[in-house]
Length: 273
Figure 1 (cartoon, rainbow, N blue to C red):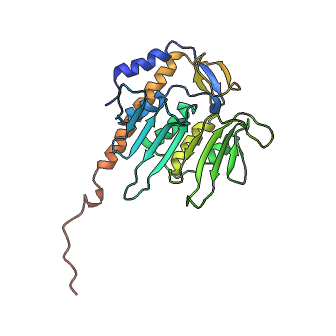
Figure 2: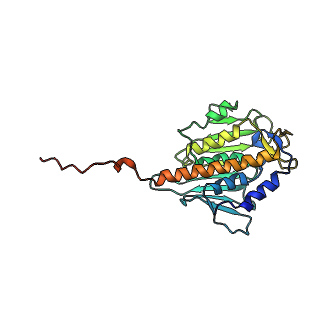
Figure 3: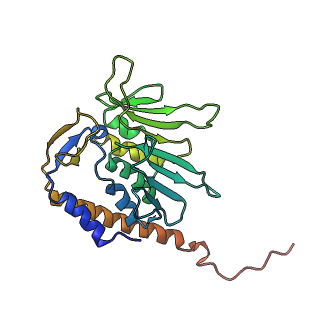
């Protein structure tokens, strides 16, 4: 089912009357509004297959290959889970995210499912461009040293490396403090999706949070935003409109018959031997 006017109005009612605060860095900005993710996928044609009276939300892609589960009552640290079934040409994969992952950062990942980037990216590029410290052992850390990215090497159980992202409380020396949230991408997760997530994570622009919204850590810096509340609502609506149009365009391209046979002339007789 597409997004209803009631659902869009509920988002507007929540945000149109709240004073936004610019909150940074992103890895400790807090979860924000999960509808940045769910509304984006719904606008792109994903459908809800979960019990509407349950706190759990399950969305499935139009081709039925991808499934997103959001469970705020999860008994595990993973509140978000995204699975892709294998096909004849592509392997299946799995990714999960913790409770306090910023919804806007996660939306960078899910948006890339709808509109892949034009070329094969380097996942490390957005991180290093944003001034994160990259080490030679396949790790990187944010300028405040609280967020850690690790490309874990091959093992006897995995034939390809997997990605792990973990903001943590400040520790002492080489010992990190307790984990704030986590993101995990298994060894089959497409590289462009990881790159899109890290691009959104390392973006220096602040995220907007309400005065009493939960942040990921007390060190998050909050300042009154120059944006008006209605601007945030309008930006959300514009993003949904863009995703809807891009998803429709992608589906048209997938269903358009190959043009290779379109202008083929009469069959030529086989050459005689």
